[in-house]
Length: 317
Image 1: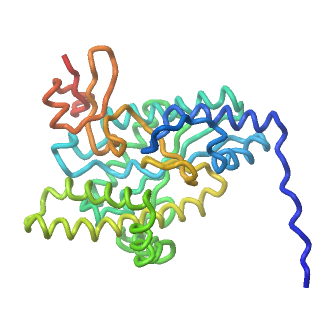
Image 2: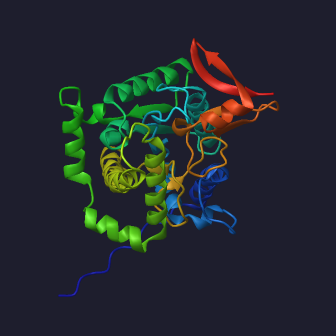
Image 3: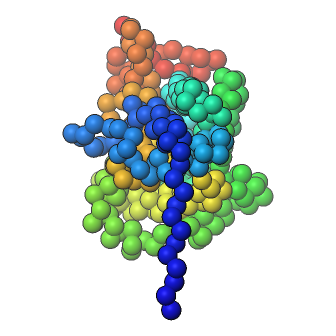
């Protein structure tokens, strides 16, 4: 039996298309990517323009979801402690200010939902759940104290409440949303962005396994195995976020290639495309420029500054 062709998709008015392009152009200077040799223009990102079309046409605020801000690295050579510091404060300020700039082109404005994923991975990255709770609570307090009204925090407590154990919550996320491990292994061999992600996660796990007492080869095997687990849970967390925030524009703290459904975003200046505030410390230069570096390097170049009685960042010079 012949079926009727699907009706054509409605075309957004030209002013709506222009507004979507203006919003995307606001994001492009901060794109986190490993791509080189191409100028970024809005029309190179059709998936992102399409995602913006609905809220712009409806005159509604644009919602961005950003998985990240999980917890501090357990490696003391990278970070100053287990609570948010100047790196998170500056990153949160940047995201709030970015939403304010978007409102100049789209008056209903924008907000970022920070999807804090520490509990999703804590057993794999070997960070105690109590430290992750403390980090997430301090993150919410920081947003409140800084008056960052365009930011929200979403984590497993918002999904499953307080009654279930962290292990039970992780099991539910994995059971309902995680991709098959064999499929993921195959994709790592055939898809370049997935391979880069696997290598980046493996490197982070290796660097952060400071309490490991076995041989180097045993640690490498453990990190490769756990990297696949992190990737499974990351995809599962992404699916859960999409279910709870349908229609949102997906940001990522990882580098993303053109054509990806996710848009990689830099939160602060960094010499490494993978570095984040929770894997590093802030060094403030004499000209006011702030840079993310591993603590050991920042400490070599600057002096420690405390804020509210806690180590915050380093100042050079």
